[in-house]
Length: 119
Image 1 (cartoon, rainbow, N blue to C red):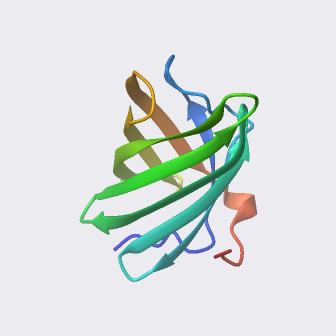
Image 2: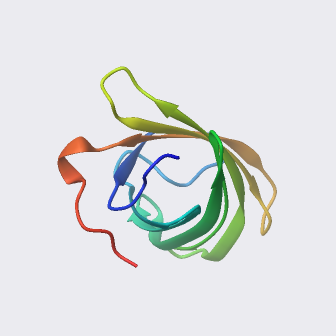
Image 3: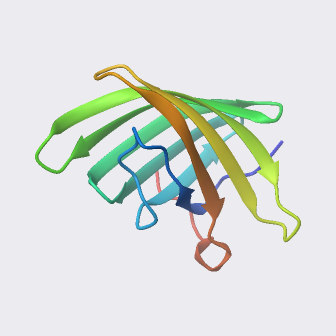
């Protein structure tokens, strides 16, 4: 099983229907197959996700407060990839539940920022 505990990721590619960007940082914690993260950056002032790992996929629900646009939420299924340099990458397939749209984002591990997890 992949270990996301203490992992920090950034958004390396975002969909046209997404609101995260390269300044967005996601900080993960993990207990067994349960994964949690807080995130912010881009248009997102506060974001939370909670989900489970099953094999090579991470499925989660997310909710986020955005600059001047209230709170939005949705669901995601991510393919977990181990890059040649050892970093974890998530290919996120998301669907909004609070507004129209869906898309694909890519999250990459920031190696220099792995540290204690935040719950």
